[in-house]
Amino acid sequence: MHGHDVVIARSGAEAVRNLGVASGCEVLVVDIGLPDSDGRDVCQALRAGGQHAPVLFLTALDAVHDRVAGFRAGGDDYVAKPFALAEVLVRIEALVRRSRPLPEATSGLHLDPDRFAVRHGERSCALTPTEFRVLAAIAAEPGTVVRRRAAVAAGWPDGAAVSENTIDSYVRRIRVKLEAVGSPVALETVRGVGFVIR
Image (tube, rainbow, N blue to C red):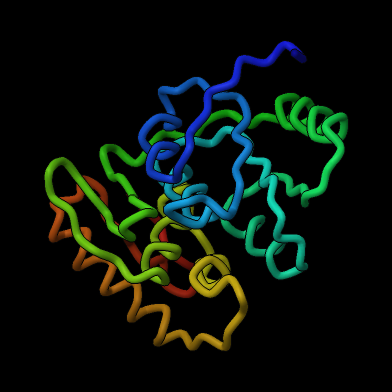
């Protein structure tokens, strides 16, 4: 009714399958409470797969920690239910105006938020939820160094005192799993700064 072409995904798995880079979407409107997964994990999986259209979280979860976790997962805006449709439409228009250019995708690396897994080709390996979130945060910015504190914020969205050794341990385990699926990209440590996917 307002001039937008709408593509609907009824689950997180369907969103990851159909709303990737090739979908041509200008804005993604994502609920956090999806039937099969957390919308924040879906957002991270899409980001890691190269989808960088702005994300508007539209959800009943309105606590401060929910909103913070949404932004840390890669969201660009957040509206809690109940909402006014006019406000949502204006926010969508603003996100389209501010759209950023797309970085290059992480060549063939796919994250599955429904199964908490990483896949390349036919090979798949399960991740813990924390490993999934850390990898998704780093893979969402291929070629860019993601600072250690950003990786920690992604892995522990509700906050935690995470030591250097702990994040390094998670990154080592993620590397092993990337090798297990024959990943075409490597997860590298930039000493004293953070991590990068190349």
